[in-house]
Each structure stands twice: as C-alpha cells, then as structure tokens.
Image (cartoon, rainbow, N blue to C red; front, side, top):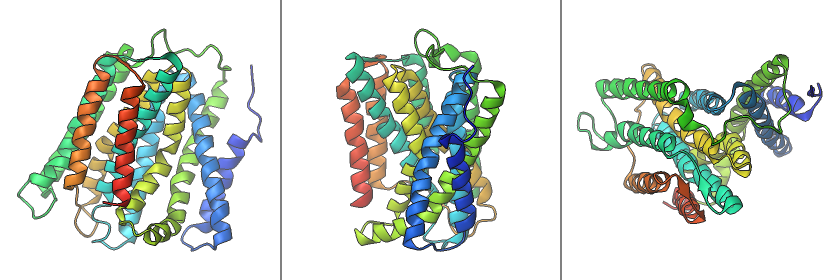
Length: 359
C-alpha cells in the first residue's frame, strides 16, 4: 500500500496557509507579505484538489464530486457574511447576488466549457450521461430563476429585493430542491451521474482509512485558508480593480474565481482522464450548491444583517443567464458534444468576464 509522506507538500502547504491566515487576519500586510500570501493561496488551492481527489476516490462518485462542492459553498457563505458585516451596508447589498451569479457563470460556462473542450479534443466527441446532466442543468436553471430572476420583477418591495415572506419562500424552496437533487444523485438514480464503465480508477493507488481522514481534514483546512487568504488579498484586488476603472462588483468575480479554482482544476483532471461526466458533476453541482445553499443561508443571515439584500439581476446578467441555460440545454440533451459546444460555452464565459470589467 502506498503511503503519503508526512511532510509532503500537500500536507504542509495547507497548514502554512492557515498559519499565514491567522498571522495576517485583520491587518493590512505590506506588499512583500502579500506576495507570500498569494503564493500560499495558490499552493492551498492545489493542495485542496489533491486531497479532494483522495477522498473522492475512496467514497466513489458521485459522492466525491459533492464533497468539494458543499465545502466550498459553506466557506463561500461565511465569506459573504463576513464581508457584509464588515463593510458598508449599501455597498455590500449586492454582494450575495454578485457572488452567486459569478459562481453560476464560472461553473456553467467556464468549467463546463473547458471540460467539454478537453474531452472532445482527446476523443473527437465528448460523451456523457444526458439524463443526469440534463437533470442537474434543469435544477440549476430553476434555482437561478427562483432566487435571482424573480426579485427583478416582484412588486412587494422597491428595487430588486424580495419581501421577507418571498425571501423565506425562496430560501425554503431552494434548499428543498437541492436536497431532492442530492437524493436523486446519490440514492435513487446514482447511475445517471457516473461515467460509463464504472467509477474505479485502476491506476490510482489505494489509500488507508487513516490517509482518507487526514485528507478530509486537510481539505477543510485548505479551503478555509483559500477563502480566508483571498479576503486578505481583497484590498489589493480592489486597488487593482480601481486602477482599471472597473465596477466594484468585479471584486466579487475575482474572489469567486479564486474560490472555485480547486473545482476547476479537479474538473480538468477528470476531463483529461475521459471522465467528462465527473467534470459536469463538479461544475453543475457547484452551481447548484452555491445557489441552493447560499440563498437559504443568506435568508437566515438577513435577520440580523443591516441594510438591504438585493438579489435581482440586472438586464445584462439576465441575458447572460438566459443564453447560458438555452445553450446548456442544447449541449447536454444529445449526450455527446464536440469542440464547437465547448467553444460556445467558453465564449459566453469570456463575455461574462469582459462585461464584469466593462459593463
């Protein structure tokens, strides 16, 4: 049995990143320290992917794909609440919306399209399970409509806000849909979400239960460090955003990119192994968890948070969401896709990034 070395970088980096987080939290580090923090942040991202792979291989798919998605979402909620508590109420009113929408675009176009492109380049045509992927996409579209589209058109409150009753309904409905999907994915129709030929990777080294539990613990540590260090870096990111004259909502996009980087790297790894279905599980599962768990959590947090909670999307965002859903449906229904479909999703992702900087 192959043993993981005690001082392997995947074990050391998360702990060093956590120490750096504790040492710099609440301060304004100089440029030299920020560079070190940035290096540790990147290392923690890579370590998170490694530990997620160990845990996923042991528990099997699609349970493995759920682990990283839920962990990142829990930390994402903590980051949103922390920033809203520490910032100006009016300036952070759209933070939850911007973060959730950015996560949806990153996963449903960026990660989704890149995985398709890699899979199609390797095999000519990327194959996946249409039933499971379509189910996941339909759930993401419904969650996004309930929580991000409807507030733009409701009339109970001025602006793009839900009333208290509407927010409570949206939170409960989102959580119920997410729980239902998890049951379908992991119990009722598990075979819809696994690659053809099973889930065992014959080339992966077996891991002991001790190694798996250590990886699970270090995965949590790495994810906490990633989000925490991203917050430490956020002032520098804000300065960079101001320097290019971009809107403040671009800060949320950058932070979302950092937080979702582990899942993006994991999805690319699976796509390179001709496991595009697992890449889709990661992408759509992350989008679903980001909406289905973040919105209910923010509904509860809004009880004590000061200021408005603006969830409704603007006109440009609505157009991007609509075309993403339509193109996504046309991509997944055949169960096969070429580099053309991957390219379309990547162009939509590029359009989202460009419009985030130049709205």
